[in-house]
Structures are given as C-alpha cells and as structure tokens.
Length: 85
Image (cartoon, rainbow, N blue to C red; front, side, top):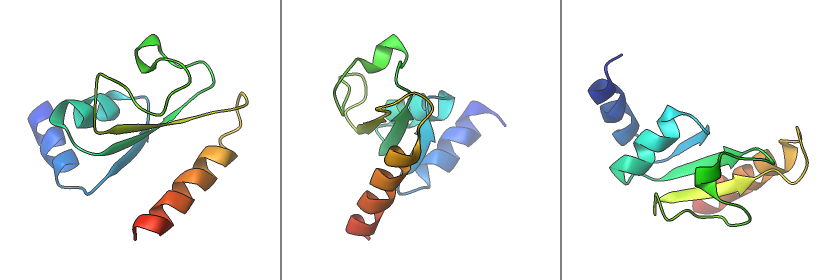
C-alpha cells in the first residue's frame, strides 16, 4: 500500500493504538491521536519515564513496567477506552 493511502486510512480513524511501528510515526506526523505501547527499553526517540513525547504532541505513551509483560498496558488502554466511550 502506498504511503499516502496508508496515511489516509490512519486519518480516517478516531484513534490509532499501536506498538512502535511506522504506523505510530505516521499518525504522529499527521497530528492524529495515537496511543503507543512501548517496551521496557524503548527506542531512544520515545525518551524514558514520560507519557508524552515532544516529537508528536498527539501521542500518548503507555510503557511496560516489566519486560515482556503487556498485561498492565492492555488493561490501562482498555480502561481509558471505556472512559472516553
């Protein structure tokens, strides 16, 4: 899929929930809301210990507290989705 088509598909959503992929960077570059699930040791661009990034103001970061344990992140995102709906 060409990047412009992918960007249009992302823009057609209300919110993108993803891990650190091109999709996250695409949404962030578009200024589209994105919730990003990060591993315990993320790529440097996401920084450490915060739930936001200066690179993408519309991104919200959800971080692992323990290696390979995604359960708390998924629970937090599920809870947040219940609140906004």
